[in-house]
Length: 295
Image (cartoon, rainbow, N blue to C red; front, side):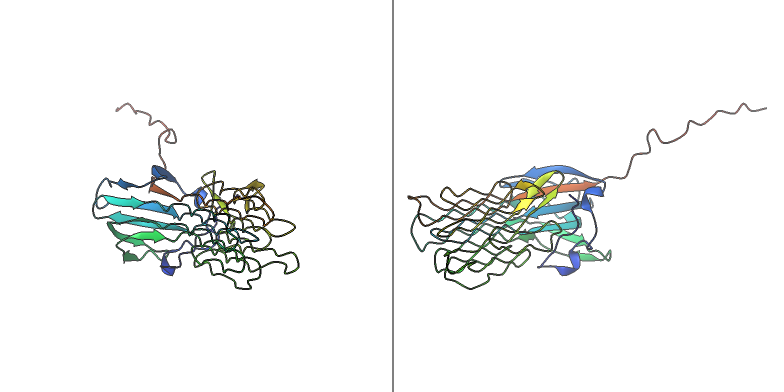
């Protein structure tokens, strides 16, 4: 699946132009963080790319909404003043078995000690840190979902539409007669955001890894599936045994009302990749030079 664009709510001038396929860029991953850590740049003049995903949110309990996916950002031409401290957003916990309980919000992913980045117009912009929000919680019965990187679904009997400040919005209740909550929002395959519905909003793939799909809702009679990436389920399914988010930044599914003491699904923690642009090697592409005998 093509990786087309990343929206940057905090710094609109920094986002990659729509239609850009980042998977075709000649980048090499120099460091991967699935937990807190640090990054030491080779120098203060070395340019990097930073890809970050916030933690997915937990699903609500009892006819509830699915957890929203974490937001995602991509910065180019990033330089660091010194070693940067990395914080990876944790996944939000699923709601306990109580009827009106919300899931937990996903955590923020960030790195500091940033000196600058280069926007799509090749302008250099000062920036002290890069951060992206986690997903908004799935709402319990009658409760609103939370706003975040992607919004969480609202519980049954609630008509609010929680906002995704980078990705998709959470859905309001889906059917008043069936007491269905709404699905959590996802980042979408083209990263313009995919709103939740009966199921969670879809996520995306980058460098063969799936990210940021929303969790599915649950109701009195039925439940929705978590969001997908292609044909792969990534967000947690809602139901009697709601699933946790299945990959980085994915939201957890919510719990049906007629199940015994099952909590909502937990959101999955976020991730950060530090990448470095490398010029294509000329080795093997240069014809051998013939030595000419001097007369």
